[in-house]
Amino acid sequence: MPTPAPALASPRKPIHLLRALLRESSYLPDATARLYFRRYVVSRFKAYHPRENATASVRVQAVERYRHQGFKRRQLAIIHERTRPLLRKGQKALNFLRRANQGEIPCLQKVLFFAYGRMGKRKYALLDNLLRPDPIMDNSAPPPDMGYPTPLQALYYSNERCLQFFDAPKPSSSKTHYTIEISNRYSRLRAVVRSQHQKGLGLHKEIKSPYLKTPINNIWERPMPINRARNNVRRWYAKTLTKLLPPLPSDEWDNIHAMMVGEKRISLVKRRERGLDASLEAATEDERFASAVEAAIALDKPSRADKPAGMQRPHAVTPKFMRKLYTSILVLCCKLEYDEQHKAWKAVWGERLKHIKTSLYTVPTDESLFAGVDSKGRLLQTAKEHDVDRSSRVQPRNAEGEYVRFPFFTDYLPADHPLQKELHDWKRKRAAVAQAEKRKVPGGAAPP
Image (cartoon, rainbow, N blue to C red; front, side, top):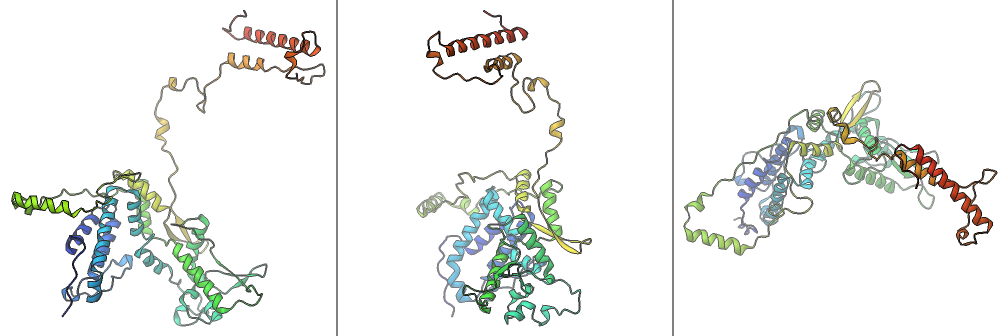
C-alpha cells in the first residue's frame, strides 16, 4: 500500500500551479520562449506524475529541433519525498515568469538565455550537436568513433571522451610547455572556440586560451605524470565548455537578427482579462467574510511580482524594448557558415547597431537656432574681446628681443629706481597699444 502524500506547503494545488505556469508561459513576448517553457513545464510535471496515473508514453516527447529528451519519470517514493520543495520551487518559477512578463530586464533576459541556449538544458543540446566529428575526408585516418584511440587517448592510456577532441601535444619553442590544440576532425568546435576567444565574449567569464598549454616537466624537473597530464586536459576541457557559447541554427540566428533590425514583426501577446470567480459570486456574505479573514490570517509575503520597485521596476514590453533585448542576446550568439574559398568553417557573431538614421539629418531646421556657435557648439568670441585680451597679454622685451621679467616686489620700489621706471614705461606702452586696437575695432569704446 503506497504511503499517503504529505500535506502541501502551499495552498496552491499542483494542477493549479501547472495551469498558472502554462498561462504565464503563453504570455512571454517571444515565440521561441513560449514554446520552450511550455514544453519544459509539462515535462517537469510529467516526470513527477505517478506511473499509474500517467499516459501510455514513458517519456515526454520534446521538439526534434531542440534535441531534448524528456525528464525520466521518478519513482513513487521520490515523488512523495520531493513534493513540498518542488512546489515551492514551482511557485518561485511562477513569480519569475510573472516578473519577466511585466518587463523586468534581468528576468526577461534570463528567459531569453534559456530559450536560445545560452544557459540551461538547451545549451547542452546545442553542445551535443557541436561535439560531433566532421565527415571523414581521408580514409587513411581511422575515425575515433569506430573504436580506434585518438593520439591523446593512446598517449595517456585512457579512453575518456574528453581526450578524443585533441591532437597530439606539440612542444613550444622554449621547450618548457606542450601545446595541445583541438583536432581537425572537430573543426566546427575549434572555429567557435577561437572566434569567441578572439572577440572576448562570455556570459560570465571569457575563454582564456583557444588551446591547452601544459608544462612538460613538474617542479622537480621530471617528466609530467600521466595522471596529472590527463587531469590538466580534463580540467581545461570542462572550463572551456562551461564558458563556450554554442552556435544557433542558421535560420534561428537570422530570425533574431531580422527582429533586431526591424525587418520582421515581433510576436507580442496581449494578456487576457482575468475572469470572475463563480464560487465567490454564488457565496453568501458570511462566506466572503470568512474567506477574507482567512486570507488576512495567512500573512502571505508578497513577491516582487506583486510589489515591483527599485531600478529594475517593470517596463512596458514594446517592440522597441524587445529589439534592445534581442541586440544584447545576439551579441552572445553565433552561427556557422562554411567558407568555400578557404575550405573552413567560420563563426558569424552578432554585432550591435551603431548606425544613425539619415532622416535625422535631412529634417529642415531654422538657422537662427544655431546662430552664435561654432560646429562644436561653443560660443563664438567677438573680435573686440579677442583683440583686447591679446593686447593685454603684451610682454615686455629688451633691445635683443628677449622677454623681460619684473620681480614681484617691483611695485614696492621707489619711483626713481631703475626697475620701477622700466615697469612704468612698459605699462604706458601697453596702454597705448590697447587704445590703438580699440580704435581699429568698429564700434569700439572711445578712450577716456
